[in-house]
Length: 348
Ligand SMILES: C=CC1=C(C)c2cc3[nH]c(cc4nc(cc5[nH]c(cc1n2)c(C)c5CCC(=O)O)C(CCC(=O)O)=C4C)c(C)c3C=C
Ligand SMILES: [Fe+2]
Ligand SMILES: [Fe+2]
Image (cartoon, rainbow, N blue to C red; front, side):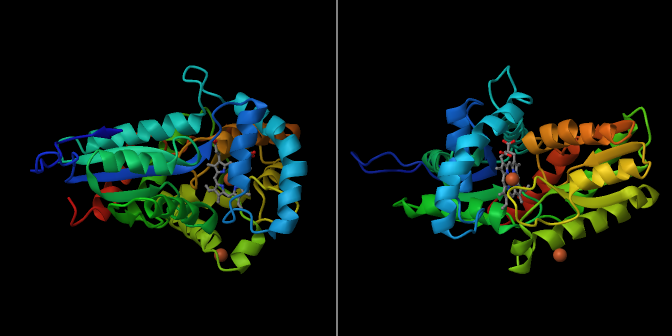
């Protein structure tokens, strides 16, 4: 937890329990991450994640045996291997956790000098939990808290489940803080600008000019779109605005969806199939950006930079680059600061 300023001193009668007050909390929340890459850490994490009804909407009578008897007996090993290939050995944690912490620290520094703003971070699945960090913010005297789901595009499987978990934690509090939640920011000019700057800078560091730039978003079951989830449309709007902002370079950008899970149809076009088809069609130089991820994680570092690079080369491609997410870089941090300041209007 990183904060600035003093909380308001409250005069209390003798013998009264201590009370801290007067601060504003900002809680950054990303998806989550296992505590380790061993079977049991992976299993615990996947079980919590895949038991969330916002994520898996399959009837419980069908899903429970499938999850517990089939998926959790094999997936922990397979996913553990993927996590091992990208693990931050120095800190013994996943990159997503390292980057989310850095984002919180840098955001706190940007509020340095501001009175009484405390910035913290949590994970929807695994640790640190949303409940534990909300309790810590409350204990630090935060009477008002902004929950920041780190998802530019809204989905029930991401944004909504973060907010559900936060409100579930509030249900157990006798003395609740006032709470706001950050809306999706898929079309916010600050976000589009940060994406464009980060993309241009990363392309400038490459030793080649890509013929095609894939904007690859995490997928969702196609059925969720049919049921009214706005995620698909918000991804499309992000790409439309980004293409316009990039000018002629924008003509190279194409939207795809990655990270399919299970046998049902997911949002299309699929990233892996597109990568193979492009190489088959003679594209030799490809770059991939991942605008839906606020931080690099197993899905960008292992699936895109690892697996999809391999697919491209196996199908005759020559140069492949997975460009970094906004992470804790200057453009991304400037965007986060502007979104958070706007949402704190009237509180600061
Ligand atoms: C950015 C938006 C995300 C959406 C939308 C999303 C939907 C979604 N995900 C799964 C299943 C898995 N996702 C996994 C990892 C993962 N997913 C996201 C983001 C979104 N998921 C991130 C940032 C990560 C990486 C976490 C990390 O620690 O690096 C995993 C775990 C890895 C694996 O075993 O493959 C699963 C499983 C579903 C089913 C779903 C929508 C219904
Ligand atoms: Fe996911
Ligand atoms: Fe749509």
